[in-house]
Length: 367
Image (cartoon, rainbow, N blue to C red):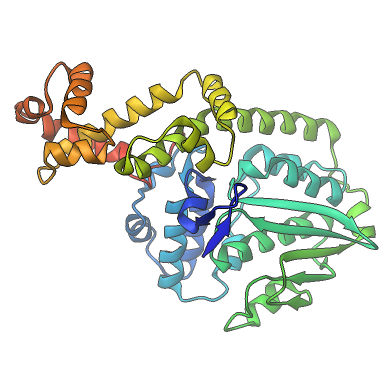
């Protein structure tokens, strides 16, 4: 599937998902849902390149590509067309940290959805939301930025419908749910779990709500607690953006270097921002494009040289250097040795490879 970026160029699904992340607690919910259907948690994680230990940090984030791989593995293992809704039932009141508490303390459902729209990237930056009044109803539109499995969007719909029922009453149902996805092979679980009129193959995924329910004051509302958690969510997102821009640049470089060294302007274009904006964001993260480029090359050089099937010429090409002599000079600056001498050093590849593999693995969770 291809989509058009702001510059008018077509971007593939892998381009769209590159650099995006999800909160590690999403991974835990997927695993709990699969376990409830008889699957082995550790086997699923291993198939997706993850480990239970990588989920221990409650603020850990998972690269979106790895999260989507777990979704695919779990869906294949369960064979359940309603697996996304089963994942929604595994979301806990602490899953999305400060956002969860801010939602719970909202004065109305309208305020809760406005909060979700504002702080949604805390859960994942792969989805945007549009919440607005349209005539005599409110609508929440789910707008994936990257290509996501249908079941992932099903889970999102299920999560927010369960949220409404937890705040306003278990019997609550929306006016209707429009799914962009086609009708599932089995509709029974959708009917029993969502309990709302459904439309499939719609132009977009939307939930429509009546105005009275959205604007009704909630008994659980606590403005002071909501503001406190808003501040925590905002600080978390600020830290995430400061740290994530460097990760996104590294990911672009990792995919582009074999075609030659990209300029800062080219990388910025791939990230859908101006070169000046990228420069500013990197400065906020206390680094520069050249520093990220050099560090990415250095890390990749160690990983490639640790693999015996790569020649020095291969590594020169993979790192985007114009000549072997340029690579050798850079490598001497990093290590004080030539690439060949470093490779011959007793124990160097064996000692370094596991650490580098861990740092290069796309699926590694990052705090």
